[in-house]
Every structure is written in C-alpha cells, then in structure tokens.
Image 1 (cartoon, rainbow, N blue to C red):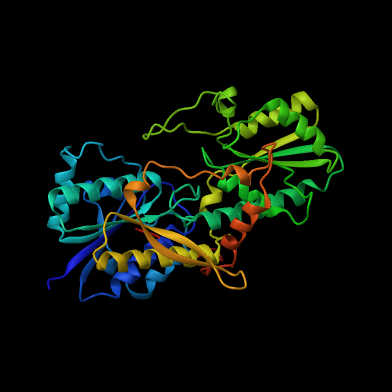
Image 2: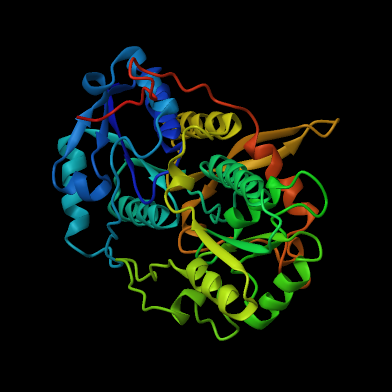
Amino acid sequence: MSRKNLIVGQSGGPTAVINSSLYGVVSEGRRHPETIEHIYGMVNGIEGFLNGTVLDFAETLPDEKLDGLKITPGAYLGSCRYKLPESLEDPVYPKLFQKFQEMNIGWFFYIGGNDSMDTVSKLSRYAAQTGSDIRIMGEPKTIDNDLVHTDHTPGFGSAARYVASTVREITIDANVYEKKSVTIVEIMGRHAGWLTAASALARKYTGDNPLLIYLPEISFDQEAFLEAVEKSFEKNCNVIVCVSEGIHDAEGTFICEYDNSVGTDTFGHKMLAGCGKYLENLVRSRLGVKARSVELNVSQRCSASMMSATDQQEAIKAGEYGVQAALKGETGKMISFIRRETSDGTYLMECGLEDVNHICNEEKTVPLDWITPEGSDVTEAFVRYARPLIQGTVEIPCGEDGLPAFVYRK
C-alpha cells in the first residue's frame, strides 16, 4: 500500500498545552512510517495553508527536538481566525482539496476550539460529498472549557491553575493592609464562566478570598453587587472579587459596555475587556473605599510556569488517540474526554470520539446548579470537578540565560 502524508494545524487562541497536543499528533504519526511518509504543519492554520506556508516536521523538529513542544506555550505553528464559507459550493473547497491531493495528504488534523471544529465539520462534509478519502479530525483546545460532548478540554486545567495561583497571590498581597479595600480580578470568559469559577480553587479555608465570584451564566446586578461587597467587609476588610469579562445585565448588555464601546472580531464576537475597570470605579465612587482592578489577560493562557502536568499529559494523549483513530478510518470526529473514577475515587480520564457536527457552534456553560442561588459564588460541586485537572507540576528546562528553553519556529 502506498504511503500518504499527514498534515496538522492550530487555530484560535493558544494555550499552555496546545503544543502538547501537536506533539501527540506528530509523535504518534512518526510511529507509523509504514503508512505515513511525511508529517507537515500548516503555518497559521488553514489560512496559511491556502497561502502555501507549510513546514515539514522532519526538518524543523527532528528526533528529540520534538520534545520541546511539550513545555512550550503558545501555538508553535502559529494560528489564524479564518472562517471557511458556509456554502460548500464556494470555490475555496475544491482549491483546498486540490492542494491536499498535490501534497498526497491522507490525514488532516486541526487543533482548536469551537470555530476550529466548524472548520473540521465543513471539510469533512465536503470530503464526504465529493468522495474524498482524506480522514479529517478535530483535536480539542480551549482555556474556556466550552466545547460540548467532552468532560473538559486541553488548556483549561493549566489556565485554571494559573488563575487559582494568581488569585491566591493577589489575596496574600491584599491582606497586608488593615484598611478596607476591594480588588477586582477580570478573567477571560465571554459566555462561559469556567475559568473565572476556577478562582474558587484559590481558597485555603471556608470564608477565604475570593469572597465574590461572578460568571456570565447569571445576570449581573450592580446594586446587588455593591450590597454584596459591603456585606463582605464583615468577613474581611480586603475583598477580592473575580469576574468574567462577559458578565452582563438582565437585558444582555455587557457590563464593559456601560463604560465604553466595543468592537467585534471576524466571527462577529464582541471583543470584551474593561468590566473590571468599570467595577473598580463603581466601588470607589459609591462605597468610598480603596479599589483596584487586575486584568489577567493573555497571561492566563500562555503561562508555562503554571502548566498542569495532568493537562499536559491529557493533551498529548488526545493527539495520539486522534492519529490512532484516523488510521483506523475515523473521520469527521473530535477527540473527547470521558471522566472515570477508580474504586477509591481517584480521577481517571479516557479518550473517546464525538461527531464534530454535533460540537461546532454549540457552547457548554457552567451548570446553574454549580452556581450559588444569589449568583455570586460557585458550589463545592465545581471545586470537585476542577481540582483534579490542575494537579502536577511540569519541570520547565532553562537555557544558559536562565530562562525557559522553549522551541521557536524560525
């Protein structure tokens, strides 16, 4: 049987372990030289592929150099936010598949979140429509943890660990003063509050900061918020409040829109930022206490220092499992995570496959019964869910300059 080539790309916002999934795909591909001849990478995703920017992993990361991907954050191959046309009659599809044919591609892997799974869906449907035998698979990735039909996603555990650790550090810093103060921590999350909920992991004891946590799953009332802050001073004169960037009022207006106009990205999503600063000013003016805001921004998705070993290992496993499934003929699927427990309650994860057409353009939010009735905290059920995902420390090797020895694409 003649050998074919495998190609893999990355899309959307990077994570601390998106390159671990890439490592899983490439390393597993290399274990099948009798079937897979070359392993290519799309530089800047499907958009880069259309522009002819492709690399060969045998040349760029030969042998043990590939191991560097496991500790490197960001997207080694680069990313894009290119949206394929809705109509499969668009000329871009035959153009793509002509390029696949010219490169003798037999397997296509795309590592990304919801919009990336949309790309996998469209390509797999076009392949089925035209009789192409290319196997097209989606590898999950997102710190937002909002993909459906999977227990969680690679990237969330490390980002959650970063959020929890940083909030704990902010708490320690705030507690040095005995004067009333409020610190607002703004965390990524447009419609799903998984990452903001992870701030609850920062607590060492009942009643510890953060005393208030607000997710976009529940409408935000600023008057109720001010009352909650006032009441929180009874527990601690230094109050830490964690909020999702996407918190909104009962009418659906984002709180960040109260103070400034927001633009939209190429997918039509509003580009959110600024609710923390708005709430900081609100607290200062209405309550007359010291207030500050901290926007964690991209640090929560690119911190290798807080990489969860569990997250890293699961990301690698997802990449490997995807290649194994594709070599067995699977296509149009996304690798999913299935939570298991041993008889003594120890957390385990197994990989599965889900139809990507049932995943793209859907969004998994935090269950409402994991949010307290007043909407200003999460329950112990969320803590039990999230805690296993942040376990284990990854040793990051350093170079002669004393800094992390990440791998770079030249």
